Length: 64
Image (cartoon, rainbow, N blue to C red; front, side):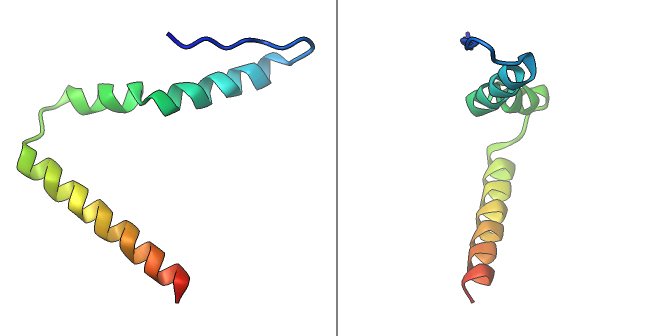
């Protein structure tokens, strides 16, 4: 359960923004979406490797 303490004089928008940030960090929504359809381990590993290569290429492009 996510608990957000609202400070005195804090607007509801700021508290909602903090809640959304905290909720996203927990990864609940990502986990829910991944469970909607079964993905074979080989496919998951392949996509993970593709993502890692993409990130590595992004890091190389910024340093050059």
